[in-house]
Amino acid sequence: VREQAAIVTGDARLPDVLAKARIETARAVIAVSGDDAANLSIGLAARQLNPEVRTIVRLFDPDFARKVETSLSVSGAMGASRIAAPTFVAAALEEGVVRGFLLGEELVALIHGSAREEWVGMTPEELGKAGVVVLWRDPGRDRSRPAAADAERIAEGEKLLVARRRQLLRDGLREMATTHMRI
View 1 (cartoon, rainbow, N blue to C red):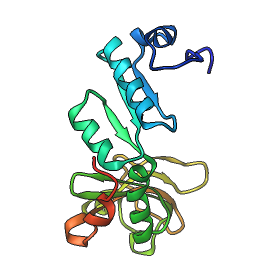
View 2: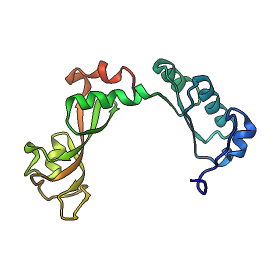
View 3: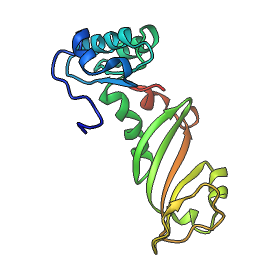
């Protein structure tokens, strides 16, 4: 890591500390201390020294995080609850959820596991039309591969990584999934 990233100790709210960390050429700054005010100060100081840098700050209050994202020059403001809420909702609805996230009015669940009975015999294209996008397939026998334009039918027991979409309004999930997160 030390060969690829600058490791600097100091108060990252201070311009000289950010300069030692090579802020002028940085592509991103992530501020994740336990202090919301310090994290926000770091993000704003970084942006002042490098207007092109992406700034992500951890803020514990989800309402404050939303306001910061819309009114200040911070690329992203989030906390653990904002990140976790969609995953909890997705896990309550589906087995094998790796991660959940919101995309507009849809809850998207990334699911990893064996092909479900109702998917066996279908092609990834057919599953896609049903709202299940196959991202990766592992039928065994060292044949793990992306499933982009795969026409081969899904076999029983085949391991899959899929993205499954659910309309939040239709499924009555909007309140639960968006309590702490909006994308």
